[in-house]
Length: 497
Image (cartoon, rainbow, N blue to C red; front, side, top):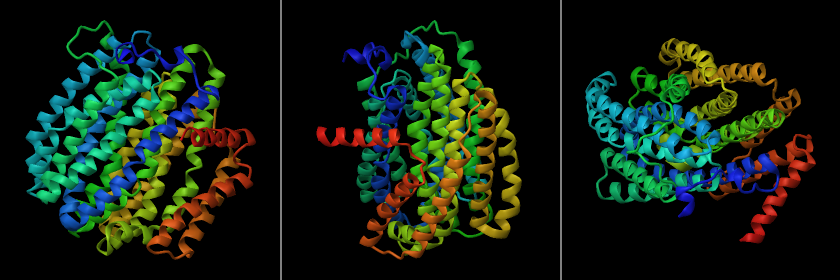
């Protein structure tokens, strides 16, 4: 338990082979694998819930969850990213963690009271009276999620990426088990929400095993430093989370189809893989870049920033594969009732990749000491989104909402890339963009033209994924050194098993 109290920065002891990039790559892989547990558990949970609740109730659950997740993200991501930066720089992390923990708890309790009071008004606007109860129950879990976020930030800032990776795995497994238990006994939206809150409690208990920041203790960390970073990131998070969920709200309020929100929510849930990558990668990138900047290793930091954006571009071929398989994946997971979600998935998967680029670019700008720049760039974009939904949703329904989200996501990504270039003088290469765009088209064509059902769909997806990797290798996207590093890690993993 010594590390739970001292928790020295991982750099103070030793770093894995491959230097800073190797540590980041291994940490990202650990986090992605742990978060990827949400895929089988999430798919099984979604398949169970769609059959237990039906499209209408599943749509209500999705909307309620979207509102609360947006609120949680708004009050935690800004604090969390600022906490990662300052904890990564600090020699004594406890005062920093205590100050952020105290601020996070106070804000989360205030938001809980506000949501509890405003739930009837939100339900009335959405024309769904039962939504009031769902939001009030969901609000009780907000402080728990806020506490979990700061614990993750401490582990990230100190470089304990492996321990951080355990937390999402704990959450997703416990969530699935609790949903099966609660909803199996009492099939209702309320019991799904209680299962989600219970999973957050389990994750918090796990986090306390690894690290124990103190809440009720005086901290000498100046509030002004916290505020200088937290407030712009707060407004940025408000905007970016609102942007990510406006489409679902407009579909629910303006499409005129009771099941539309359920279809749209089901499609968005299947865009989780790029989201998992962003969640696994962006905080770790912020920690490593902050540490490099603090050491004065500007050139190493620039190279890491360039490779990070390049890695996001390399997600495009896999998005093309998902888009081509959408008409087979959706009914395989949700059942034939949810077939209308397939064209939505084919569009929204590209929006998810665009938002990964926004997240990565934001971490790069924060590490450079420019937390206000993402706010300046993204909030005007968020302001243009509602008028676009007002125009497109009545005319084109859920497809129009998906198109608006995807278009603005990539407009935001392009803006953020230019901002990174202005501050760091780095860009993804034109060759990387062209190669990945071509492989994306190729992957989409193969996936769309190759019909597969049942077991063959399970075969089809990894085969096309392997084709993507081989195509990028043949086109020279990956260097021999990068391939050697990956193969060395795979061999090391095989020998340790």
